[in-house]
Amino acid sequence: MISNRGALSTTPAREIALACLEAGIEAAHPKAVIREKTALNDDLLRIGNSRYDLSEYDEIVVLGGGKASAQVAAALESILGERIDRGAVVTNDPAETTRIEMLPGEHPIPSKQGVESTKRVLELADSADENALILAAITGGASALLPAPADGVSLADMQTVTRTLLDSGATIDEINAVRKHCSALKGGQLARTAAPATVVGLLFSDVVGDDPGIIGSGPTAPDETTFGDALAVLDRYGVETDTGSAIRTRFERGAAGNFPETPDAGDAVFERATTHVLASNFTALRAARETANRRGYDAMILSSRVRGEARESATTHVAIAEEILETGNPISPPAVLLSGGETTVSVRGEGSGGPNLEFALGARLELAEGVTVASVDTDGKDGSTDAAGALVDRNTSRDGGQEALQENDSYRFLESVGALVETGATGTNVNDLRILVVE
Image (cartoon, rainbow, N blue to C red; front, side, top):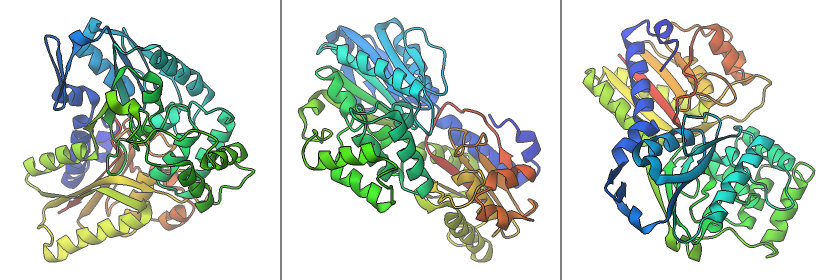
């Protein structure tokens, strides 16, 4: 899975860190998750703790989008086979399927290609009747891959506002509140389009807290945010009128009651809609912890909900590792600390990188002897780079690292010192995975 593993695995601590990364990513892959969380017995389909009698439906349709949606679709085909009548998912990482269309889109900025692909998903949803069962594969990245601009909003408007909010350090909850209210699909509107069909959301979470309304901007889940909330996000981050005038106008008109709100939990469209979070960041963390334990390390999951500035989070993580070295608290070495979640980067410089790369660089500048740090995005692509993340220890050069951090140029620096972790697309997406090995 890690293509440059041989070059990185130069010490026992590095080997442990890499093994934990791979175990976490593999455990969260849709093939493994679908095999564990679903089963078909005659006409009875089990999804989590729920049962669906397939004899009650005239057709089964698979719809969705996201970085891992193609792998979810392929896994569903392996179980349901010819019972699937039709379907389409929008992804930037296609898989081989026979009954479900693989449609292209782009991430993290929505594209024209994605708009056209999403139209097909909405067409299939709209054509389903009350006797249809729709299995909706929604994974991280769906927010960008399923754009569907609302009336009066252009793709260019969505691209500009998305890019501005990403660079501002806005949280994913805030960005998705905006996305939901300038979309015809997000915030429960896919479920609204598909009604009265039975809609079952199969979710792979890449957000802190695993809220179905946040994952992929919640196409099949109730939305508790409003036009007023979305407008407040634009104001909070100084998104000027000329940056997203059509979107701001829509939000103002929506807040005044001129547009219908996205459906909330009390809406009738959810009477036949359910969601199942099949995998999350904790899925990866738990598998990584088990791997560390099997290798003889005391392992602790600090949190699956770490957020905030990546460089600041790195300092805190290193401080905990130092405490373990000095006092054996909260666990004794040899130890492995694990965390997940989604840190952010407020872009001030002209360099390239992502939250995991910036975390690794920030950690390297603080590292004590005996601590090894690995941080990756489980989808294999950190920010806009082609690296999953990075692996550093005291042998990793830090010369010029401070300057690179100030310029948000973590990618170039970590590449130059041979610290990048390279996986390519992993087929899953359950947020960030961080490993600190304390010898």
